[in-house]
Amino acid sequence: MGLIREILPERITELLFSYIDKIEEIADRFSRAIKLLNEVRVGEARAELAEAMKVQSEASRVRNEIISLLEEVRIDPGFKEDFFHLIKRLDRIVDWIKEASRELTIIPYLELPDAVRKGLEKLIDKVLEAVEDIVEAVEKMLDTEYSEAKELIEEVEKLEEEADEIDVENRGKLIELHDQFSPVTLAILVHDLNHDLEQVADACREAGDYLRALIVGWARHR
Image 1 (tube, helix red, strand yellow):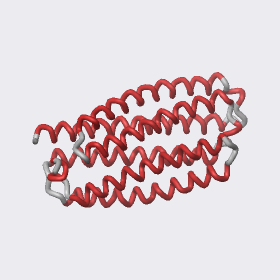
Image 2 (cartoon, rainbow, N blue to C red; image 1 turned 180 degrees about the vertical axis):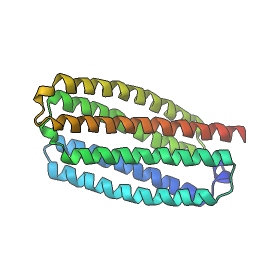
Image 3 (cartoon, rainbow, N blue to C red; image 1 turned 90 degrees about the horizontal axis):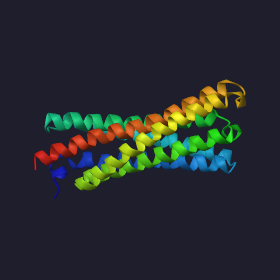
């Protein structure tokens, strides 16, 4: 039996697995929505985004139960604080994907300049890869596969840096192609979507930082 099972009550680990499964589903539905939009299947894309919103509500309920149980459990205060921060950062991933989903429901995506759409999709690919890696890193941590978890955290850091670079490129395209946006408010909405996506990558990196802190703490107490 791994050390993680000795520190956390079984119910909390079960809920954590459930929580990250829901984060993965939210990201998957967002990804499918983008693909459907590019196939001009707008109604189906909006249905996927609506389903993602429902899963986000379920994730919030699971998150609240985890926090409630963590408040009651007697474990090392340092571990507990890092756990709270980890959950908060994972919750930020959900929140920012939710914001990006809202932007997508009101942006006439297929009417955007091709260069802007390609830039957004390049960023989306990086962001969703970061989400996938941080979810897997949490799974590895819960299964006490610490080396594998740390490798995934390092990959998330690289992806976040690449996402930052794409974010800057995309903002440059908005300025360069400003005359192709009508009305002008459309450019603002696209800027907000770009920002939301970049924040997802930031939240993944921050979650990785606290995940690493937990792993280092457990290693000291083995």
